[in-house]
Length: 373
Image 1 (cartoon, rainbow, N blue to C red):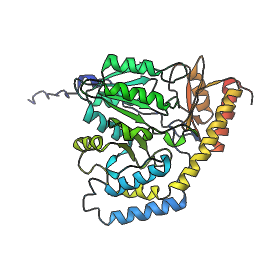
Image 2 (cartoon, rainbow, N blue to C red):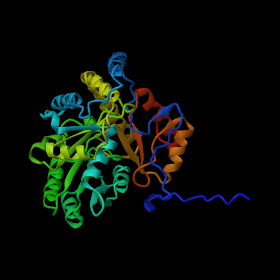
Image 3 (cartoon, rainbow, N blue to C red):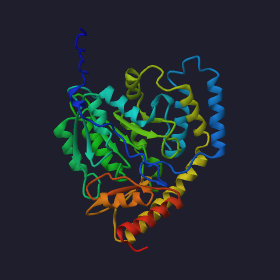
Image 4 (cartoon, helix red, strand yellow):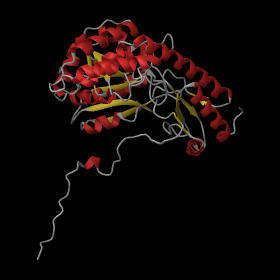
């Protein structure tokens, strides 16, 4: 007689039980404006350069890649000098598989059991997941009604919770709000007084889309060794599919991340792809300018129709306020336009697309929300 089969339980961490994985809806519709992608595919010239670089890298795929990706770090430092006017040594730059992995490295190095990470809501929904995955306590303060951050409130929140990590998204996701330098400086000063130390990470995933006159936190690096500024090649460079994120910080900060990274975490193919794209930065940044113009025009259009719109320095726009935002979202989807149901109640977020995609969104929204055309 066959013995009863014993089905052992999986020893899943209790805090992970019943949790669904992160992910925005991935639906096949004509107009996809829900995940803040660059709507423009790489040009034929960029594709050819990437293909040639990857082909060359492929000849050595039997060997491990440069573990410290020194050439890529030098190229990223050179790019940031042009983009933000801030000179950095390659040793001050770190990269990984998307800014998500960069952030995870930060929490692995500076978070952990008995430590706290802090941000200000509403903000990027992945932040608490980085904290959870590294057994770091997660707390949030509140942003103002216009989604800005009051420096006094930020300082008081840091003093109350004594975090090891402060995460500031600027421009903020999902609101598009950029932080003035005085606010970041207030946070840096408060973090410097936290017993045991505290690092501040300014997440500039959408930094290239900021409006003229909006500073980058990169300008503050020289005087603040506990500051890191995170960027990505997914948005402005249109490389979401390549998964390349990076940060700039002091060499001591970067050295700490080398301890927690997995060996050879950045493949030779990824390094070759990123370096090839960086060679075309002037062309790609010109494209960013057109997306800024499209964003500003969309903000004006929405406001002219009586909607409330958050000021945006990103490649997306948060707008509302609707009594039933899901009905608006669903009505747009029924008309072939996918946007994001995210942020505070009543608000919706739309990515900036091509002029044709933006027009499709406008036409659908006029019908669904009964707006003037």
